[in-house]
Structure formats: structure tokens, C-alpha cells
Length: 204
Image (cartoon, rainbow, N blue to C red):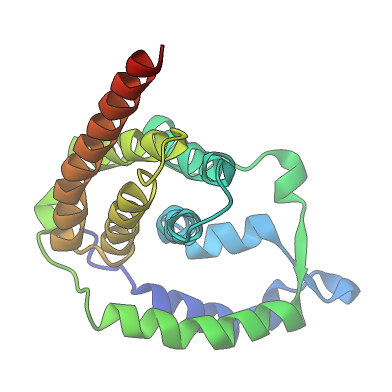
């Protein structure tokens, strides 16, 4: 673990403090690529948490498969490149200073509440190829979210949320708990798939 690692809440507070310096000329907007460069290594984990929370909420049948695509994309990019790569069209997107300031004002207290439960520990899990292995396991769980089976998306989404919090705060315990629960999540998916296949054969 890098000794200069900052908590996500500290990164967001620094961003809110320096927001005027990021504003593009007279347009009063902030470029998305600039935001990613400031948030740094925690950007991927924060995005993973956001999209996993979305897939965790029950949706219209079949919608989770669509909503889970960004989760798969984030995990795949972190596994392959070690960072979230944004296409040029997305890098050029901007957000108004007023809207970003409002978002940060609401988000920082929520992040601080999460940080009371998570703290840097079990740093060995983030060393070398082990962190790449974390993203590989997260990718497997993310793909399982896409499988259009009833009652199978919520548990892996919860596991991804726990892992994302651990990645954001460099808390190996949260990552290990989320990873361990992920085994149970995949087992549930397999059981449900087998049951549905059995019912299908009985109906034929």
C-alpha cells in the first residue's frame, strides 16, 4: 500500500477545494478526464460501487443484465490495463461546477460514514499480482450478474459492493469478505440454473 494513499473523502474534499482551478475558462464546466485524473486509483473502485449498487436494487426483469454491462466493463479494464479507459467522446464530456459542487457536498458525508467501517488493513492483498487477481474475481462476479436468472443478481452485486469499498479504502478485510461471499453467490447461480434446466426438461 502506498503510504501517500488518501481516503476517498479526502480526495473529494480536495477536489471541492480546488474546483475553481479545474474550471475550463469562461465555460464554468469541468472536464470528465480531469476528474478521473484527480480521483486516480480510487475512480475505478468508486465507479464499481456506484454501478453495483444500481444492480443491487431490484429492477424490471432483464434490466439487470443491461445495467450490469458497465460493471463488467470496469472490471475488465482494470484487469487488462490497470485503469479505467474512457473513449474520446466520454473524456470530452463536462459537468457544470455548480452541479459537481452540489454532488460533492452530498457525497462526502456518505463516504465518511462508509470510512468509519473500513480502514487500511491487510495491505498484502493489494501487492503485485494479487490486486489484479481481485479484479479478475470481480469480473467473474460481474459476468454472473448479467445472467438472466431470477434471484441471482443481488448477491453477486452485494459482493461487488463490499469489494469496491475495500478497494477504495485499501481494506483487505472487506475485499476478502466480499470475495468469500462471491463463492456462495456463484453457487446460488449454479443451483438456480440447474433447477431451471431440470424444470425445462420436465416440461418437454
